[in-house]
Amino acid sequence: MIPNVLIDTDVMLDVFLDRAPHNGPSKMVMALLEQKCFHGHITATIVVNIYFHVRKHLGKENTNQCVRDLLNTKEIEIHAIDRNALATAINSAMTDFEDAVQAVPAMLPEELLEKLL
Image (cartoon, rainbow, N blue to C red; front, top):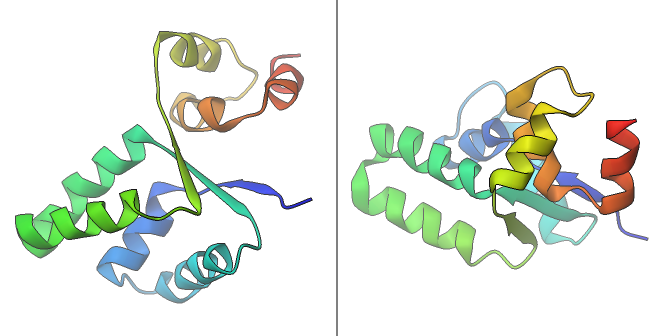
């Protein structure tokens, strides 16, 4: 069974902006994703955060292309964040709310139940 992996905003920013010193490992994560070593998951919030930060460095047109490329990456599933996800995140056992907001929508129901116990 191929594992599910939540890809953090910083990994994507490292790749899009070629940020040292983590650009090498982050590019490796993306290469493993392309090789189908795991299923990638992000949330819509991550896409918005990427746009905000990348636009400062690469401008609107290049940023739009980065986001288009991300949206066309079939190996990454993009999850919505809604009221239920926010409520679950704030009530979860995770100590960091922002991390919980990112993790909750990508969790399978049984994984979510384990986090809430």
